[in-house]
Every structure is written in structure tokens, then in C-alpha cells.
Length: 320
Length: 280
Image (cartoon, rainbow over the protein chains, first blue to last red):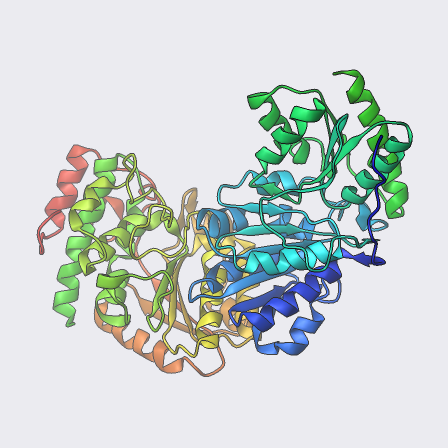
């Protein structure tokens, strides 16, 4: 008998607004928190922070390389800089600046990246970065966090201020069901087991966590017991949560709004192949660029929605 | 410190540079020799800093960023000679597990270094960040930088230049090592910077010029630069230098940008540079 799966959803909210609220709140608690933005203050929901702390807000204009270098420099003297721009301009555009001045120099910079992935929507592939998790997780010293809803993004934004070292925090544009409890204790590197199950483990991050929950509900109707893990921290990865789960389920689906190459699924595969080789199916972008369209249409077309997670689960169970 | 003492120090720094690069059989002697006088002056005379108790935060200290990180030999020599770490460690330059990496880094915790550099064009942005933090902290000490002239071909420099003027970052004194040479040849031939002084002026900076091998003039110009801080404008000094200064066969060419002298060449270089403080 599979337990009924219910989450209390507190409306639909965008994760970027969670970032905006978290930034304001942590800035009230910690006077060393400063914000930098490259001409996307409204999109990043940094206006409230700017209004409350104008002297701690640095508008750098459309100059992301300079923003990253400045953020690195601002740590000298004890500030905790949060940079804000789209995920594409937070990573690919400034990879070398992050690599040398932030990661290699091990500076306490929080790279906060909105509009990640396909769900950015109509702007199309130029802005839909699907390689950022891979780029960031490859950098030594870098922590990589991909929260799943408004509340968790807010909690993660506040949590990273007290983590000493560079962090990449990735969130998005669309409104998604807000179901993580507002008082949840967000711990970097500690996965949330959202649903316990025995037949298949679904490990998801970001936008696809809710889709994984939906898939688990529908799989339950078919008599399949799916365990759902919200792997909000890609690096350092909670290997224990993965291994404990697959010990029960013996198979895994990973689901992410990112290239299959280099993403969460790859990280999970490394853990499994080194410890307990396990059948795995990947839900993610399969080596192609995005395109214009509505978020949900795009995710369906490119294989990153609830039906694709269900199909992957049923396929991987057969491979056990 | 008087000019004679500074000149003697710089001579020893030049010996250190050629010995380090020769010892490692690699490195960048040309630009290092060209900036030996400036960095000696900066660390022994200009800056307010604490070599004996280095802190990453550098609160109430002047902070220096070497943006053209490949001239690490001159920086390492000056840092050691001024007391940040033992001078004998200079012999470890570019060796396995050394704190003196080929390009400056923070991960080996070498005192005196606050930011990795080497990939060009990033140091001015870092300096602006530290300058903004100093303002937030009510810390009225200054931030100094050094950049290669070839490095100014990097776009990020000009992003930073726009920011500094627009946001009135007036506690930064940037310096350009204007030696006119880069790896592939003369800057003028590789890709001309045009009228550099007018460029910086057009970007809203206060522009000063000096001869990077004239201690007296440098003292005066840097004093003037300091007097101009706090006036709402960032300051840049275009410093005319000779790549390879002090070693005849390394001067007048770009060829010693990134080559190490052999034993015979080292001997010839050392014959031209007085040992004033004792070699490491």
C-alpha cells in the first residue's frame, strides 16, 4: 500500500522573489551583506534591498566581468557580496573572472543567478543557459545550490551568507508551487527526502522537484512507490542520501533543468558508479540549445516534464 | 626613504628577479625589471602597510593589486625584501609545492597577496571592489594597482574604467606600465592603444605621467596622486618604463617578456646589477 502524498502548497511564487526577500532579510541581520547588480535589479527582485540599503547596493551597469571582479575585491575588508544577474551572464559570460578572482582566490562571493534554463521562456536560447551547473560545479572551492521553490530560495539565500566561501545559487523566472515550509531549516549539502518510496528513487533539483512530486503521485496510482529527493545542493553532494535511497530502490531517475552532460545526473552517476553501480535514467536537456516558447511548452517539448519523469521511472525499474 | 637607498634596494630586487627566473628556467624578467623601481618605491616608501602581520582584510592599510600577474618575480622580491616572508623562499619560485607560484595566488597563503592574477584585465575591477569596501568601512587608506599596457587591450579594464569614474571611486591610484611592448612585439604594431592619456581622460580619470626609472620624479608624482584622492575622480598614472631595465641585452626588445636567461646570460646580467643587500 502506497501512502497518500500530499503537500500543502502556499500558492505559486517565483523563486527569484524568494531571493529578493531572502537578501533583504539577511541584509537586515548582517551589515556586511552587500549587493551588486548588472542592470537587472527588477528582474532579480533586488529593489527592496536597494531601497532599504542604498549605500550597500552597487549598480554596475551592463558589465558583468567588472561586477565579478568587484565582488571578489569587496570581500577584502569583510563584505559579503551577492551578485545578481541572469544565470547566463552570471556564469558563461564571466567564467574566467569567476575562476581566477573568485574560485581560485577563494573569495566569499555569492553568485546569485536568475532566469536559469528553458523556463526563462520566450527570450529563447541566447538567454536559456543549460550548462551553468556543470561549469560551476567543476570549479574547486565552489558550492552549487539549486533551490526548488520560493521558500527554499529565500532560506538558501539567507543560509549562504553564513557559509564562508564562493557559492553559486541558481533560481528561475516562472512561478512554481511554493510548498517547502516557511520555517524549514535549510542546510547546505543536506538533501530533502520529500517522499519515501521503495521502487525507484527520483533525484531532482530546482524546477523539476515539483514535477518529480507530481510524477510520484501518478506513479503511486499505478502501484509504483517512488522516493523523491530534492537535491538542492549539487556540490557538495549528499552522497549518503543517494546511497541510502538506492539501497532500497535499486534504481534512479535524475531530473534537472540542465544539460544531461555535466549536471546533477552526472554527479549522481559518479557516486553510484564508485559505490554501487545502479541503473539510472536521465531527465534533462539532451545536447541541444533551447528556443522561444512558454516555459511549460518548452519543458514538455524537450523532455523535462512530469510525463517524462514517469516514463523514465518505469523504464529504469525494468532495468533492475 | 631617500632616493639612494631606494635605488640600492631596486638593484637588489633586479638581481633577485634574474636569479629567480634563471633558477626556475622560466618566468617573465622583462616587465619585472621594468617595474622594479616603482614597486620598490611603493612598498618601501609610499604605502602604509604591515609586512610583519599580514591580514587578508588589510583594514586601515593601503592595498596593492598586481593585475599583470606575470611579473610576479618583481612582486615576490619586493614582498620578501620588505618583510612579508623570508628572502630565502625566493629560490622556490615556480618550484613544486612552492608558495611562489608562476603567477600570484592566494591558495598557497603567501603573505602579501590578496588576489590571484595572471589572466589579464581583472585587477582593476578587484581594486574597485576593495576601494568600495574601504569606503563602506570608513577606512581612508588607498588602493593601488599595476597593469601592463598590453593588458589594456582587455575589455574588462574599460568596464572598470567606466564604473570608477561614474561612481566616483576616488581612493584608487592605478598605474600603467607603459613599456610599449607585449609578447608578439611592440604594442604599437600588435594593436595600437592610440592616445592613452586622452583615452583615460575621456573615461573621466585624472591622468598623471611619470618616468618609471626616476625615483625623485616618481616620488613627486605619487605624492601628487595621493593629494588628488578624495576629489571624486579615480586617478591613473601612465608610467613610462623600459622593459628589461638594468640588463642591457634585455632592453630595447620584447624578446625578454617571458624567457629565462641561461647561465652565461645570467652571469652577464648579474655583472650589471650591484649586489646591495646580499643575494638570497
